[in-house]
Amino acid sequence: MSIEVKPINESWKLIKLRNKNNVSVDILNYGGIITNLTVPDKNGDMENVVLSYADFDSYKNDPNYFGATIGRVAGRIANSKFDLEGTSYSLESNESNHHLHGGTRGFHQMLWDYKVFETDSDVGVELQNEISESVDGYPGNLKVSVTFKLKDNDELIIDYRAISDKTTVLTLTNHSYFNLNGNLKQPINNHIITLNSSYFIELDKELIPTGDKVDVSGTPFDFREGKVLGEGIENPISQNEYAKNGFDHYFIFDNQNEDSVILEEPNSGRVMTIKTDQPGIVIYTGNNLDNNFELAEGKSEKYLGVTLETQSSPASLEFEGFPSIVLKANEPYQKQTSYKFSIVDN
Image (tube, rainbow, N blue to C red; front, side, top):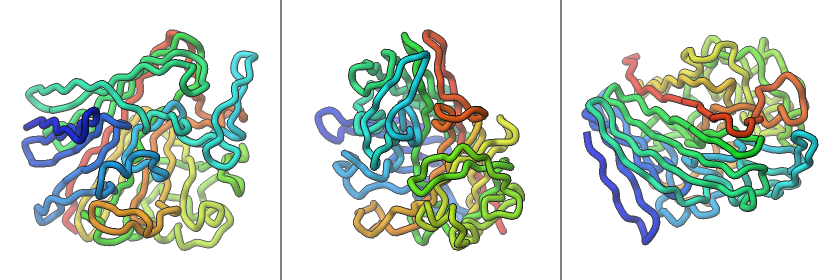
């Protein structure tokens, strides 16, 4: 096991965590960004399985949120406003009329304090920040920490902790784009997803939830028994078309704390199993990517990565029956998502 802290510039540091199996993850203290995640394939070849930029400056004002820690609220807040305990709050509109992923002053654009640690079975880094309510328009001064822990069983665990001095809204996630082919050899259409979810949330043409929960049965959104991503991407129903012929949808888990999501890539044999205590997940298939972005392995392209954003739902601010994002004053926010990597030799 090893930890290396590499200076990128005067304030940015790259924290490189490596376990005994040579699995490694690189994390920037700017944005809490995962810039590299290297795991073996069935032949033992070590390759990167997340999208990352060719140069670090590209992470500034990144429209794709590659690898970033997202907050205060992951997802879209309709019309950039919400009511809470009798008070109306207006936020920055950074996607048409809507507020996306915490706005331009969100967690993905912040410099974080960091503290590295090592035990007998893992290495890690804890990122810490304090956000004033005057910074981003949300109620409450917030103390937050995000801890990345790489274990010797090839499991990456992310723990999210926060507390606010006022009742506020909060749901945090990581926005890594996964591609288990390794080193971006091809798009993610051949990946198989198994998802513990019977309902997805319908979207309107601006990708804002309509308030309807849709049964996945008989639709391209039914991943309960496992489905190749390309089958859904290529299915021309309105929900896919709204998301530019792909997925950008929230799924509610049937059961939490189980193997909530399994992502497999048959050629490499790589498997990633996600466990989380979050109530749901956004699956986004890189529908907006094009060849204008220089990545570590070359030009970007559509469907080159899939995000698996475990979180609650901002739709709960408008509609009943959705996983709430309200955090009461002085009550702790504690969430965990783990990513376990393994091999199946097909």
